Figure (cartoon, one colour):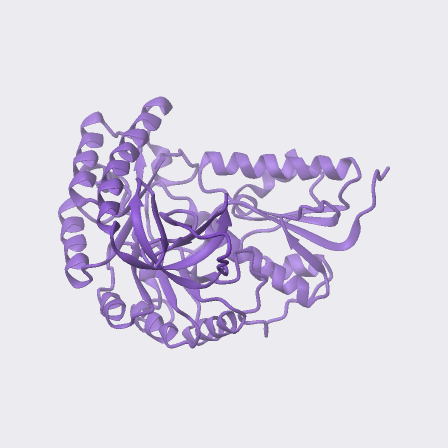
Length: 437
């Protein structure tokens, strides 16, 4: 028996995982709104008759979070708080058969490329003409722009090709139109995402076209910043750096997950690169764009990783002095190449190695941040928090990088999404502190 009323045409979309999932949820929500559904993202009102859970299946902790969320809404359905529960995304793509047997309360399961089928189930039409029409879940002044789906890389640890399929680039004209639509609706920063940015264009244009795409996007009126995420090191198109150096609205920023430094581990991970080649690539990038901030991601505890391999990575990251580093423990994923190997590094050792990497990086970040003290920086305002305005420089991506905290007089009010000049007065490991210039 229903214990409270719900709105039968209200949809609550719940997103788990990475920025690519956020993008997919935004596209879904845009389609639903065009079909005259009331739709919210992670609604606090808790009155939606329909819940769609967009899941992540990348690593074990993400899978567990997705399963827990599905169970939460399945229980709400049994209690009469929700009419229908649907599940989409990576976890559903990969484990649908097992999940539907274990959680029968879910009304239907959909994969990563099943948007038209999901809409049809909701008696909604898939509107192909809605290029660039999304219901943003981010603050209006920045938006993720997914330029491709899937991945052709053979990385041993990664299950993304199993869930997302082969690499498929989005045509350049569609992306430019999408960017124009976002700019017209107030977005000032575009964050380019894909499983592998550097592969862009090879499938549909028969050559790497990332540089041309970035150049064309930089000409879209109203876009002040363009940021590049998830670039694969092997085959990196160096002409992108020419665009970065030439166009002032292309941020001096590059996210390039390198995963490890030991040649033994890189070979086992099937990364197609060596430490020497990575050194040369990073050196070339910094030579061509001296003010660039490099973000990378590392894995600790891959099968066969010894203490010597870990110490090699520690020495390497100290020498490279990356501006930004993320690090996570290896997750043993079914049907990947690495799953044939013994997961022989104890979990506590994996966590200890992550902690050592991140403790070292905190010291590096503190030292690098000191160079900003006494300078004036252009800052994009993201939010107000605990009486301080919080923003970012061009060297920082939202949610994952450093922030700038700005003290202002009580009678000074800033606007979220505006650029302001800030005099930096002090710096900690991951924050800059200042006042309006």
